Structure formats: C-alpha cells, structure tokens
Length: 271
Ligand SMILES: Nc1ncnc2c1ncn2[C@@H]1O[C@H](COP(=O)(O)OP(=O)(O)OP(=O)(O)O)[C@@H](O)[C@H]1O
Image 1 (tube, helix red, strand yellow):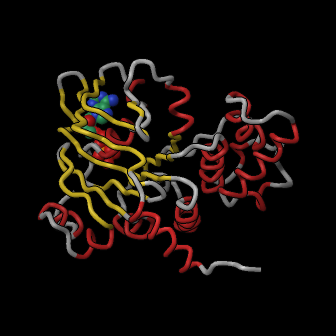
Image 2 (tube, helix red, strand yellow; image 1 turned 135 degrees about the horizontal axis):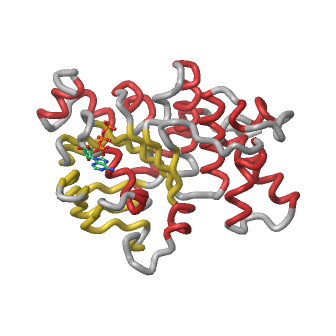
C-alpha cells in the first residue's frame, strides 16, 4: 500500500497553501452594533486548505469577524456590516444570496457543543436530508458514516447511532457537531473557540481533528489559547480593539511578529 507519511502529507499541503488562491477575501470590513463600532476596515484573506487562527484580547472583535464570514451576524438585529466579503468570487453580502445555502458552504462549530436533542444518526442526517444531498436511505447511511469517520467519532458511536446525541461526553458532542458540519460538505468551517468547554484530552482530540480536516476543508478558528493557535494553524491573525494588527505565518507570528502589540499579547503583557 502506498501510504504517504504524515510529514509528506504536511509538505504537500504546505505546498498547496503557497500555490493557492484565497478562498475568502475580506475587504474593508467594518461592523457596528447599533452606534458601537466593533471592527474597523479589516482586510483579511483566508487561504484555502489552511487553518487560520484569529487571536487577540477579549472583546477585540475575533468572533464578530468570524461571524461575518457566513453572515451569522444577520441574526443580531442591531448589527450592521460594511465592506465586502467574497467566497471564491461570490459577494456573500449580495442581496440575492441564499443565506441558508451560504451557511451550508461555510459551516460553523460553536463554543459550546450544541447537538440537537435527537439521535446521533439524526444529528448528522438532518443537514444532508434538507439540502437534498442523499437520494436514498443507503446514501444517507453512507454520509452519516463518512462524516462520523472524518470527525474521528465513528468507532466510538457506531453501535449506538440511535441513542441521543446529548448523552455523549462533552468532547464527543463537539466532535458530533463537527461531523454535523462536515456532513453537508462545506468548503469552509468556522470554529468559535471549539475547545473552550472541553477537558485537555478531548481538546487534544479536537485539535488533532482540525489538523486532519485541513486536507479537505478551509478552517478559520477563534481561540484564546496561544498554544492552540500555534498547534493547529498555519496562518494567524491578531486583532486588537477592532483592528486587524497583523496577519502572518503562524511560525513567524509566535517567534518574530512584526507588530509590537502582537509581541505584547503573545508574551502575556495584556489580555
Ligand atoms: N450582540 C452584540 N451586541 C452588542 N455588542 C456586541 C455584540 N457582540 C459583540 N459585541 C461587542 O463587540 C465587540 C467585539 O466583540 P467580539 O465578541 O467580537 O470579541 P471577541 O474578540 O470575540 O471577544 P471574546 O474573546 O471575549 O469572545 C465587543 O466590544 C463586544 O462587547
């Protein structure tokens, strides 16, 4: 069997990353909550097959920017977004865009695992069913299995697919939510502090998973943990007071950042 070593896979992905186009482009993105401005003309591009970490002190606008990428901010009445964000070449704020379809292409995993109060099987099958991604029960079974495998959960749940998703451990629930996001074949997955409610072992599993998902998806992750950003991402963007202060290769960001504010933050001088 011709298996590529892990290092070879990493190398191939890094090569892909340097060659590739931007999957999403954010140009002069500003966000207001009523009168309050939360983001100031942010220009941030997201590379395909790359994990991009968004870091910065509390309240700096990381989650706000993340939520702009699949229009989750639309659900907040007071929120207004200006500037332009594209997915491939499509303007995602174009009034003709179908937001449900957009969120199938740009999925999201939240801070707190939020499985539906339904069976493990139904948690995964729901999305593909409503998006018409499976033609038969056999197709759907296959999507459920593949998604759970991609989320590293199949072996743990394959004999209990009809049990409730909410009965799983916190770490398993978060992987179930990742499987649910993966099941509709998104192109981009947004993760808002996906490990903050998990213990170190569950966190390690999810981090490993993020690392693997990069081969098939583009990932943007908000994290408070510098170590996590360093472990899982290839690019890092640092926000401060609503400004994007620096975006760089993660290695450079954590060894020799260009901006003093990044330096101060990673040294623990504020935040
Ligand atoms: N729904 C909202 N209504 C009003 N203001 C909000 C809302 N959500 C966020 N904000 C404000 O926008 C700014 C940016 O918040 P955001 O949650 O994006 O920051 P963050 O960097 O993700 O913070 P944290 O790390 O604490 O989650 C903050 O000042 C916050 O109070």
